[in-house]
Length: 245
Ligand SMILES: Nc1ncnc2c1ncn2[C@@H]1O[C@H](COP(=O)(O)OP(=O)(O)O)[C@@H](O)[C@H]1O
Ligand SMILES: [Mg+2]
Image (cartoon, rainbow, N blue to C red):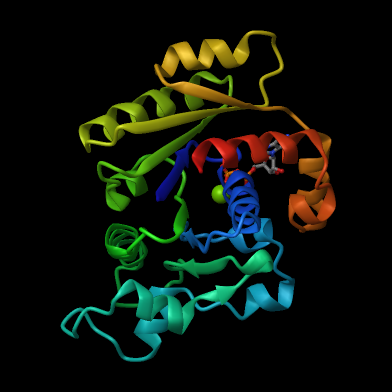
């Protein structure tokens, strides 16, 4: 199964991606966590240390450093995972598609996006789950191009801007033929908020409560599961993991 997690910036995509990936891995499935954000932070939500994060090699940057060009033969996602993947807690295999760096003469933006397309589109997911934490907004969803059989998880909050992006994400996912589209209603404070978001997007919605433990973990720079595994948010994300699996 491949899951593309999308939505407006700051709505909780990375927190959910990192936590879900580890919870699914604990159920015994091989998990690939793809950090497709050119400002990658999934390593933090997965529970990597600062030193480990500093040592990560995003695919496109590593390839460029090795002298690779577009004219060279394509490298398979599994070879990229082998070369540049990093073993995160609970056995999750983390791969970063690309990091924005000012590099004269190179289109960095396309680099990360086209690597997202190549890896997410071509990785074999029959015997494992692939969880992709996409860049904020909809551009990366188009690049990732989930297909029929894949899942798109759209994270929304009760803000007009986040709903606007969520509704467009549903439309794009449907245009791409994705039949499994789920929403996460994050931090809904007003009662009935989750139901209103479900109605606005027209998809099944799972709720994730506002939880100070998430902010604390964020401030400390550690994974939610390493900070407060029994917190309401961690338990709610566990239900999202169960639904996805
Ligand atoms: N349910 C929640 N309760 C409290 N804080 C949250 C919750 N979800 C997300 N946050 C906080 O919101 C911020 C953005 O979360 P993040 O997962 O990085 O979002 P995104 O990847 O969508 O940009 C972080 O500081 C995170 O701790
Ligand atoms: Mg993020």
